[in-house]
Length: 331
Image (cartoon, rainbow, N blue to C red; front, side):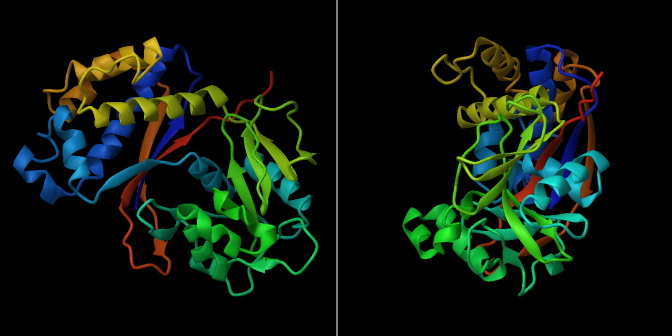
């Protein structure tokens, strides 16, 4: 799988230019997720018109996702000092106290495909246990992965999960230690809105979206809340940018109505692209650079390993766009 990381260099300046800056790499990611064989009739990757992107993308098995959880996963696996220190403190409150923090990124697609992304397969062993915060023998992670995927798609299968982890299908990733082989379900909440679910133990939120910057336990939801010093405004803009692109793709990049995009600034960003729907996508990306906030993003590309779990369904997502926010430092 290709990961197209978009690392934040500077704070968000204004909504419109920031939204243009983040929608451009999302569009580029969609373009690069389409197989070459589907582009021949359109003049190749350099010739595909913006207005045809939605139709061509729907007609082939390529797809692109925006994964906010990748920023946390990447920071943990690469030993980012600020993030791993906070994550280690949160894990200690879940009785995981030994070894460097690790992350398992488990992706479930709407088609039913299940795969580990950028995750060493040996992290998930026969002895890997899920700590749910309840009394009793911890459930084993490996044999439950297929059940979690089924629960994600079919609500009627959730009762088949052990009571202590019936909400674990909501986990965005698993954090833990390979030394202890213990893991906890973790949710990424970029807006700071916490959600309780049986089996979830840690909630990662950006600093400033909850009542304190310190790691604390939300007793009502049975969550260890771990604020990370990430720029919330940047993550929010990527979330809004994704919605704009999704709306444009659905309408083949024609101008959108207030019902489709209620926010006037969002519609203005959409209009910038709708006016250029008859031009080749590389031309559009070059032209819209003038409207984008300069030096907001530093793009990079890498190919990471994927490990397809037991499934008869091949994954459709070939490209993942990973927004990586800057660390906010105190003055």
